[in-house]
Image 1 (spheres, rainbow, N blue to C red):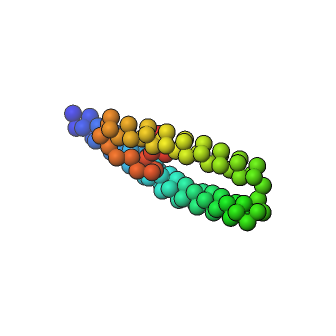
Image 2: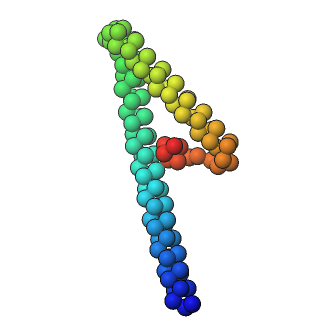
Image 3: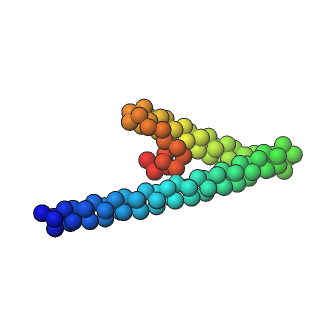
Length: 105
């Protein structure tokens, strides 16, 4: 009986260690996602602001502007669709998805 209790205790400890490692890895990935997402968003916004200024000053092609507008509208529509999906998950399961969690669903 003692051998069984020792085995089950060791097994549970190993399982908990595995869960802890997975949770730590997931948190690290979420943190990296937040960082990279913020950098990408800022770079993208700066680039398009620069394009808008160039167009205002007559230095940009209207075709380039039209393509940028379409691309941005598609990106925003995709973001809106994902956000609605996350909100539905939150409502269905009763949890709050932060940016990192949402990225994984």
